[in-house]
Length: 213
DNA sequence: ATATCGATTATCT
DNA sequence: GATAATCGATATG
Image 1: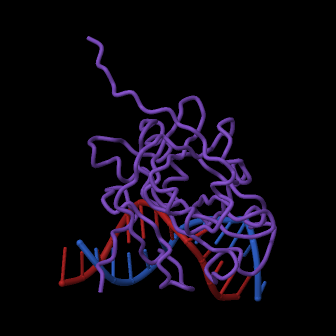
Image 2: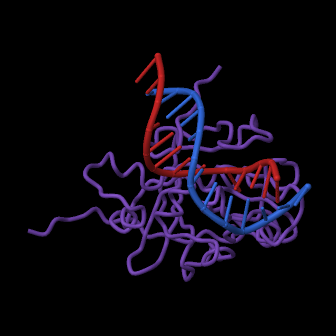
């Protein structure tokens, strides 16, 4: 008895031009796209939550104080992975935006696991008992990096537009619906700017959408 | 359900 | 020496 699994649509990489602009429109356009990690098995997660960090005018951006060894990728050409280590424990993934020489990036905050669930669970040190357990795999910037085995040493500077990279970003023709913006999470400077972009109906967000006032 | 707190280290002042 | 784009555990309503 062969069970027919619905055929997933093919995933096409995003091109460099997609990222060669302000991080805000890039953030909006990234919702619904997929992050792919090639390996023994392929890991796929749908992007449901990101944050924009406009390089020049944003005091919260890592690029705010100028180019350093850590943030150099943000000042380079668009479409590359900027990965940083935070709180002595976690990695976070960004994609560089804007043309070469100008800073800007988008932080990946939450994914919906699509393929490679078992491997993600193993990387996170979790056992999956029911559908509810899937949420904790990738619903946070540090968590998704752990699930996808992303580290600065290995993945910083990766070309995210190339499907030959270990890590890349693609489009499987999913149509994003219900995009909302909210204040960003976990920052102290410019905390009120609504630069967090979410698919509002997704159960895989890192935090709930704040009630409006 | 929300709140608070400790862990742990690269990076910058 | 202080800080940080977080997480997981524990406490409290």
